[in-house]
Length: 94
Picture: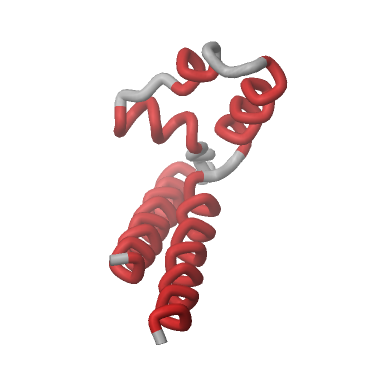
């Protein structure tokens, strides 16, 4: 299951990069797709309202992370994490 999630996140990363590339080719601008943008547009989650219930220091760090991290980079590293967990899981099962 972890390997499948890793593959899915990498495929989603390629879709985001494909969208950005097509936009760059057609409009000569590289759109910034952050975690905050994706969560609001595709999932309907308003992270800024969720952050209000967190302690101040954690809220600031979470808001900064979501506003500045590109979605493609987040998906890439999430895929690497899933593949790493798959590797660790296979070692522990032996």
